Image 1: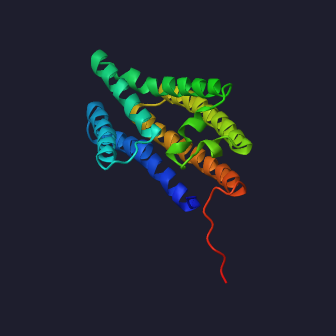
Image 2: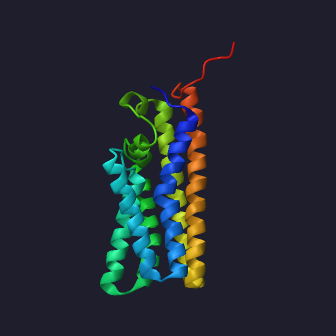
Image 3: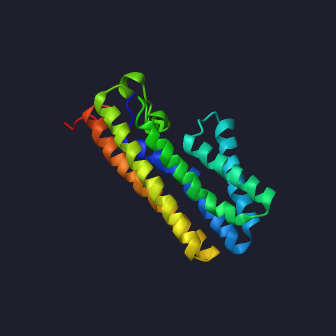
Length: 208
């Protein structure tokens, strides 16, 4: 069954809120009213709680949520082991850079990264994924997200060198959210155009 465009947009927005916006907002709020360890704990509790809830209700956890939870876990363990929270704030830039490189490398293969995660947001079949226009869309979207991650890594390093901790966390939250929302909006815009031209979206019956 072909989904409606609004349903796809709602699903993307929910995934972004669950995996990016809410944990970032929790981290910033707990850092302001508590300390770095309370912020780390709150963000981790949210991610694992969201994953446990989706698994208990037999819903699929998006790749974005798995990536966020995995990244937070690794950074928190390293911070606890070393007692050095500076590395925690540097690691997002390193992570963004590594993700950008992986996205760029995947462009040379038959299935770029966006093609691998598309099923999180649309009921993708092999027939749909094999269509030439859909494959070109996956390639261009993978390139776009690689560039966004690379820019975000550079902005994070620049802020870390020049801003106070509170300013950095607030600015990082704004940058992360802004890039995620902008990237999602552009992705939906271009994907919707291709989906409509390929007849992949539900169309309401014409009015008499």
